[in-house]
Length: 473
Image 1 (cartoon, rainbow, N blue to C red):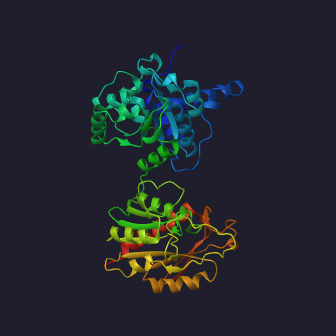
Image 2 (cartoon, rainbow, N blue to C red):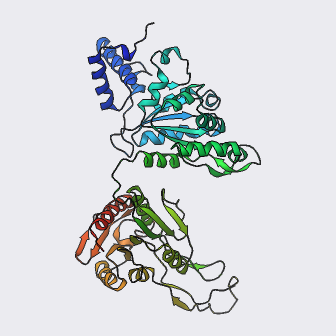
């Protein structure tokens, strides 16, 4: 059976096909297959056969963080290859088109059938494929993607990349590309720490290749543990989003100090005073600022959520530790204090667990006031140009926020009602995924509608960028 070569088509036909493919976010080859299937369907009055157009062109997300982006995923030969099935799904959920190159070794762990079903595209495996290479397929694959992801990147594959080898389809594509490359290493800890691998990693980093992971943990081999686990799919997706984020970076060069989460004030080695803060809003703001190019230093109290991507995090427990960490990070261009810092601590925490005594009265805890971090920074000799505090209240929200603005020396107070009466969460805003805030400044109050905490973070980051551009010293 004869095959159609795209480059041999009439110029006008190629241009029309190129426009149609771009409009649908597909490659020209994929678009041609779908178009021919549609024509056949119209001619015969029959629906396309299962596995043809219906599979090749599933509905694409009309919006998403990766909408319209084209990812070429090179799957290496490691046990972590199974994670790539979930990675494909996560990328497509966000609107990306995904094509896959499967190395020979990867085929021992995942099948082309499984990968193709998830990508809704053909899977490429052979450098000397008669069907693909008549049109210099490896060059085409290397150029049509917006980003190439290598996962899992084995020690062998990393060595090939670093030394410019091209003896299979994956390495040929990587050598022929002029696009960004993201590598997710996965290998035995001793392989990862071997001097040869270290040299290869340094070479790739010098060439501009980006890395995500590896993490620490148990290996597939019994009794093996250490650094070498492939990053989880959502970690890789976050790295992809960062690399393909082509938005303006209005906060580039700006250093921002932040706090987030609760503080824990010990009563004894077992018990502590705390609050319901989850850190979700503060961490989301830190990530949003980093996406706008800011150098964000986040001082986080004890939380159960991951550190935000692209942010340097200092972990602390108590209010005094948080204050000390913040002061060490000054000077900065802006300070944003989201943490729900405990107002009081026990005057003298017990060295041992306080035991309940039969018939004895409950112990009396003497409380003393904790340092006020916002006020400390608001009146500091190294005060940032912009100081933003948060006010979590259960009543008279605006009244308390205005008083806090003056007393603490802040430029803006972001106030919200954290009571259960808001209807946002069973226990209020703390721990929930949505928020409704009021922006209180000397010029007045701006009421923002209820939205997700990520949306609040994006909007506040834009406000910070705007204020820092207009503030003059």
